[in-house]
Length: 420
Ligand code: C2O
Ligand code: CU
Image (cartoon, rainbow, N blue to C red; front, side):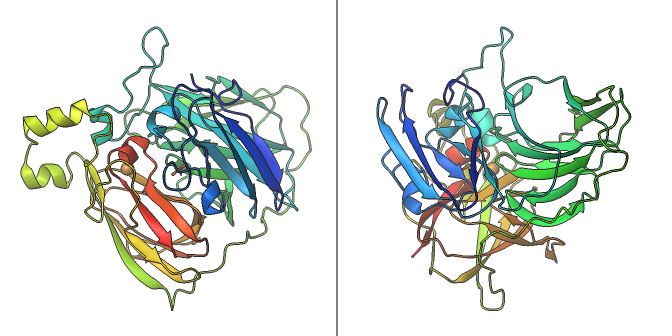
């Protein structure tokens, strides 16, 4: 494994909202790296994108990241250099920004979810960046971990209220967690407060890089076990772990009766009347445009792609497949303006699309307004789905906009949005 401070996940960084964070990164890897603070609205120079916002940190060199933390919530950090391998080998960690006035819970727990492609001898398979993964649903592993371990049980106490911060740090796996009759209440998505609600189908779906803060009242009986299952991929359902109730007496006789509303963060509200609208389309992939337009790919093209590590050109944004380091923006926005991006996924695959430097409201899916108009920084698009997002371009700089299936990103599904 590759790790931050010798642990996977890396240390949980905890800071209070409004504080300033200063982190010295020393690169002891044999290759260049950077650190990106996923979801945090940092100044552009602190965003950790190699060549775009900083020079990559060479082996043996250091870089100091320093920025104010304006918003509370559940975030994470990871490299942005060859992330399909660096993140895939274990470089990631949680970053929790505590509210000034947090909701009342008995325990605040973080679960960083990941999966690994392990060989029979439990070595990590070294086939990072392979063509099959890049052109299909990414590197989905065969072994799922919670906080770097295969957990069998998670001990809980009758009557306790747990705030569970879920972070999907996997390269490509989408999680769809079901909690049986323990219907969690969602209080935040991607770190941003949302009107507390239960999920209609009782399933928490998290694409790569996405987070959810859940509040669960443990109403089971002492000694009981409740299975949390991941049912996202049909036919590949599995048990993630069991909540195991302690035998002791309940923590309290009745469920805690305390409000679940989190105070809003500091994002400006987009003005939808005045907002400028841009269409953004995603194309490519197997069984997408590439296969449909030309039938099977020529053997020469396939061979060429299989030799390259990056497979640039498999996926595209607005018809352009990024090659190498993207520098030229495909969209230039005016600072302070409101924008709607009308995105359509013209492929046969899911894509969690991530915008750096901003959080956006997800205002419509399939042409219908969303119920919660949730703030996110990464939005999961189903095959062929249309999703509209809205935000104020208030953070100047050049910002990455990419699919967080890291193999898709490396294979062309990224671009730059400039806030002038
Ligand atoms: Cu989580 Cu561009 O990153
Ligand atoms: Cu993708």
